[in-house]
Structure formats: C-alpha cells, structure tokens
Length: 637
Image (cartoon, rainbow, N blue to C red; front, side, top):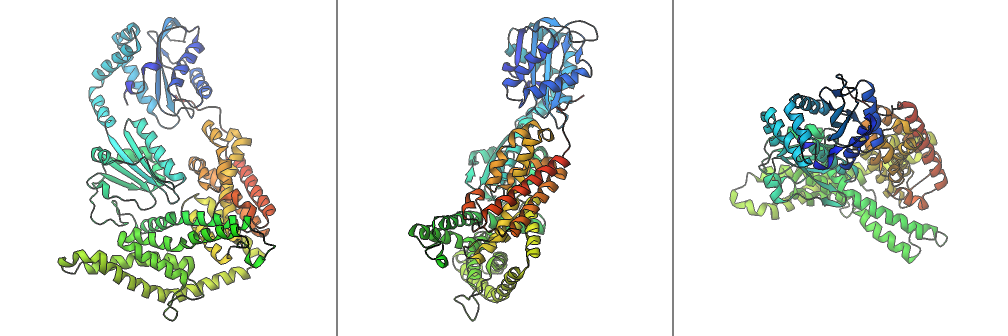
C-alpha cells in the first residue's frame, strides 16, 4: 500500500493554525472525517489520545506522526497538515512540530505499521520534509510524496501498481438470497478497497440478480470469485481464473480470497454440473444441490403461505368452521391463489435439486418426480393415492432424478454421434420420465407409510415430548442462522403445514419463534447493555428489532460471526426457551413466514407473544453475562 493511495487533496491542510497539541489532533481528525473513513470521530479521538499518553509520536525535525487503530475506522486513511507556527508536541529535541501525518487504521491487521515504516524512511530525508513545507498547494504536496516514494520504493511501488490494476469480479448467492448474499458482496468490495484491488460483486438475491457483470467486464477481469451456497451459472466465466467457495468465506475471508483468486485455476466449461472448479467434497456438493432446491422453493412457500394466512385473517369462522378460510369470496380468493403457489412447493424443490445435479436435462425429471411424490402415485394407483410421500418423497425425487439423468446421459454417450441432436429433445425427456416414474412408484408407498407413522407419532406425543421437539427445532434455528441446521429445522416446519390443512402448525410456530429470537435478543442487548458492543454494533442493533419481528434470522449473523463463542450459546438457549413455551401454550401458525404479520392468524397469539418475549429476554440476559464489557476504544503501539 502506497502513502499516496491513502491521501487526497481534501485531507491535506497547508498553512493551518493550531494553538496546542489537542488543536492539531482536532484539525487532523476533521480532515479524516471528510473522507468518511471514521464512523465515530469521538471514539477515534480517544484512541489517538490514549496512544499519545503512552509516549509522544513526535520525532525530531519538527515532525509528528499521531496514529491509532480503532474499531471506529472503516478503512485505512492518512491526513496531513503543515502549520504556520509549530506547537509543542513533546518532541525529544524539545522543538515545536509543524509537519504532521495522522494515520487512521482499522482495529484488525497491522497495515498501520507498514504505512508508518514508509513514512519514517521518507521523513529521514531532510529534502523530503523541506519540500513538503514549501509546497504551494495540496496537489504539489501529493506530487512530492509520490516522487520521493517512487524513488525510495521503486520495485515495491511497481508491484503495488500491478495489484491496484487487478480487476476481480465476484458472484455471491446464499440459499435464501437475503442476508449472506449482500454481506459477502460488501465484504469483498471493502477488502478490495483496502488492498487497492478493483472488485465488482454481482448479487444473486431473492429479488433477482443485481449489479450484473457485463461481457466486457468479464473479458477484462483477472479472476472471478464465486461465493455461493447454491448453483451458479459458470459458463460465462470460461477461460477465466475462478475460485469457488462457500458464501460464508466471502464474509469472513474476503482479503484472503482476493489474494488467492489471482492464483486460482483457469475454469473450462464442458458440461456444467455441481462438481465445480475445485472439486468440492461429496457432502459439500449434496448441500449445494439441496440449497439450490430450497432457495427456489422459498418464494412459493412464503408467497403462498402468507396469502393462505390472509385468507384466515379475512374469513368469518362463525359461518362454517369446517370451511374456515373459504367462507367469504375474498377469503376464498386469497386461499385459492395462495394454495396454487403453495402446491408448487415440492415439485419446485425436487426440480431444482435435479437441475443442480444434471443441469437442464434434470429439471423436467425433477419436477415430475416431485409432483408424483405429492400425489403418492403407485403401480396400483397411478393417478395418486390417499397417502402422499410429501416433503421427504420430493427430496428423494430431486436427488434420484438428477443422478438418474446423469446415468442416462452417460449411457447415451455410447450412441453414434449422428444421434447427438435428438438426445435433448427426445431421448432424455422420454427415457428420463419413464425412469423417474418407475422409481417413484416404488418409493412412494415406502415413504408414504413412513410419513404416516411419523405424523401419527407426533400426534400421539405427550406435552413433554412436544416441548422437547420445540426446544430442538427452535435451537437449531439459532445454531448457524441461515446454515444447514437452520434450513433443516425450517424445512421440517414447512413440511408440517400441509398436514395441518391450513389450521396452523405448532411445529412451524416453534420454528418461527426460534428464528425470531436471535436478532431480537441482540437488539435488546445492544440497547440495554451497550458496553458489550462496538460502536458500529450499537448503531446497527436497532435494525435487528425489525429483522427479528419479520422472521429474518440473518440479522444476527454479523454479531455471531464477530463473537461466536459468546453470542451463539445465548441465542440457542433463548430460541430453545421460546420454542418450548410456544409448544407448551399450544401456539400454531398457518404460514411458513411473515413473523409479526401473521400473528393475527396465530392460534393463542397471547401465549406466542409471551414465548417470544421470554426467549428474547433470556437471550439478552445471557448475552450480557457471557459477553465481556468493552473498553472505550482500542489503541495500537
């Protein structure tokens, strides 16, 4: 990192006046503030003063380099000033200081030491400091630094210039497309700014792809980072260095990924399957395939589920309770539209799992397999039976359909090349359909009976067993906040909605409570126990009230990632309490999402409020106990 990369003309003040040491510090902090490098100037000022209390940063020759690293610094920055009249800054030669450089560095890393060493080497040259004092304006001041720095560190400057010229593109995507997607993109772009690397990140979120990468940008880039937990189309990156990692790595290892990307292997597109680029492990591939299905399923689950919930909100049960949800024309309309979307849930899940495994030829087979699972088709009842294979059957159909299609394609590879054109339009659809149809007619009776036994067992459970189930499912929602445990609990909860026939699921209520507690508990703790959190965390805390009430668990991720050993246990216990109380109070929810917006159609909503409040308060108290109090600011040597 070069000195001139951290300075700009608006952060240089020439011919300034300051009455004393603190006056100079205030002047330099005001310059730093212009660039937006400081999130909390007061906190950074305390860090600077704490550093000065350890010993003056003044050196001989009228020069001082005040510096500090603090959590209030967003990105590394330099400010400089030349005073008309020097001030006593505690220099060893007891002479006043008139030439100042202030270094602001983030709390993590030792970049400030590199900057400080560069500065001190240059400032040892009397000609350098003399020309800075004589600079007529800020532009000439920066030009002087650039010239001397290039002379002193020529080879390093050349290397840094090459790095600054690097252009890296990124694609981020998480299963739900809500929080992780955008957090990874932001982390990569911020890391790029710190390293002097040009980074552009495309986000493939729940609202569609944003900040799309153009053909021209892809052609000109040096490398591509794909930080995703679901399948991403890689064909456009053929011939480019490509690094494929989980989305969590994009959040937590951003700088490391940018360095690795320039040495990543070149991606060659043959026929894209889930085995991408770095040949991930079998478990990793299966997880990505499953999450591809879940991410595409969620809009149908959420949209359809909430419309069905609104149908119950708008209906009058006194007309005919047996027909509750469809008694009035308005309610019937909402329930019908929501039901159509909701009924696509399992075929979509299976279809996109198969797509992740076998690309487009697997999509149709997966869809049909999922639909056959829902209908419960068997050899004796091809039109469907009264026992559906449900969620588990659709899950099996997705994986079976994808791998059946992979096998079929390998068999078809043995056919003459003259038949290549009819494979995708005739052989794959017909043979694949027959294969998945036969397979599902064998599997459906087995899975259907398993589902019947499972739900019968749940119905026969006593209150103690139900409470234990609520603790486990709600706790899973808080273990990894959007990861595989969270998704497994959520998908299990949504699978019980179909069996609930629109009347509400106590399992779904416990799951939703478990997902709402972590962000609410963190918001409460950051409000009432502020000294446990950084300045940035305190400012972001209130947003988690909204995130939690809307059932967006991912709002808690930054806090858990920064301090997992203290945050996660508190959140898991709080969620478990909420899930247990929700089950104990007999709360039930007829929708898979929506948070507070579906409370009007929640069975025993009063008990549900109590369960949610109790879990959130317990989580807050545990956070206050487990998280150590923080000092006012961190300083650096």
